[in-house]
Image (cartoon, rainbow, N blue to C red; front, side, top):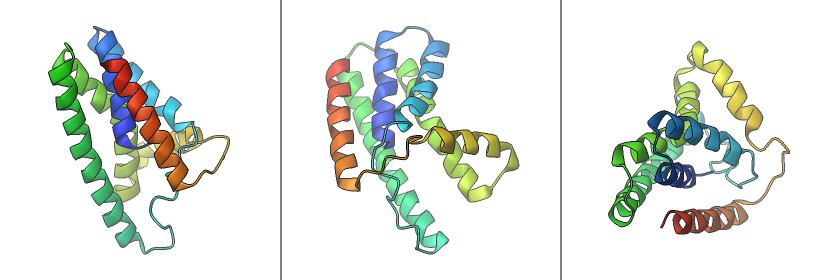
Length: 151
């Protein structure tokens, strides 16, 4: 899933739970649950491209996603009485598994290998491949439903 969807679920969790530890833990857990659903972004960047070009493209996508998450977060904060610290903590928790995966893919720290293996294991475990287009539609619908739940 895109970070925007993961973060929106984190925001939904923070909008209903008033315990920062539970918010963070549930947001992290929600990431793995969402990633187990086929979501079409497995081939977001062509794997045949040189590694440096792939990393640059993924970095650009990550930067756009962070901006979208910030915009969504500030929008939610203007519409819903939610503790902003808990909400941003949930956003961090919801994004953390992908951040760790990204860091591992760049720097190859050995201590991140167990997380990387687990993340890959739970990512679409049924190996159902859907197109990027269908995945984007699925994720857009999910995002609208999550935002509707929060509001």
